[in-house]
Image 1: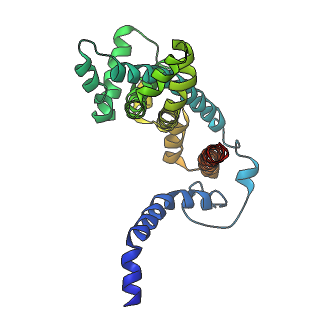
Image 2: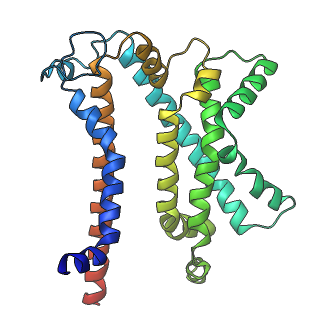
Length: 272
C-alpha cells in the first residue's frame, strides 16, 4: 500500500524520467559506439573497446571538410534568421499595418509545410533565377526555413513583455536607442537566444532541403547519408558525441549564469 501511494505521488516525475531516458537513448548508443573497433565497414555491432577514432576524428576523407561547411552555414543562417526574425517579431507585436494578419499567418507556413515541398519550391526558384547551386543557395534556403521558428520564439517573448518598463525608461529621458539596448533587448534576449539555438540546430541537422539545393556541395548530414550506403565510419559517432557534449555544456552554462544572476538580484533586493 505504501508503494502504491509513493507511486501515485511520483507518477509524473517517473513518467518524465522515462521519457527523458527514451529521448537520450540514441545519444547513449552513439556515444558507446564511438569507442568501438568494428571488423568491417559498418559500425552496427560491438566488437571491442578502442579510442582510435577519438585520436583521429578526421581520419575519414572529406568528413571534417563537410563538417566545417555545415558549421559555417549554420552560423551564418543563424545570424541571418535571428536578425530578420527578431525584427519581424517586433513588427508583428508592436505595430499595426495592412496585411498584418496575412503576414502573421504566412509566417507559420514553412513550419506546417512538408520539407520536401519547400525544398522543391526553393529549387524551382533558384533554377528560374539562374542561380548556381552551392553554398549560397543552401544558406538562403536555411535562412528561409529557420525564419519562422525564430519569429515564433521571439514573438512569444515580446508578447509577454511589460510595455511600462520601456515607458519608465522614456520618462527617465532615455532615448529610443538607449531604451532598446538597455531595456527592451535584455528582456527579449532569452527568446532571441532560444530562436537562435533552434535555428542553428535546424540548419546544422537539415538534409532534405540541403540535398535539393546543394548541387555538388556536400554538408555533414549529406556526408553521413552517403557514408551509410557503403559503410559507417566510427568517426561519425565521434563527431555526433562531441556535438552532443558541447550542446549539453552550453545548456548547463546558461543555467548556471541564469541561477547566478537570480541570486545576485535576490541579494541586491535583500541588501536594499
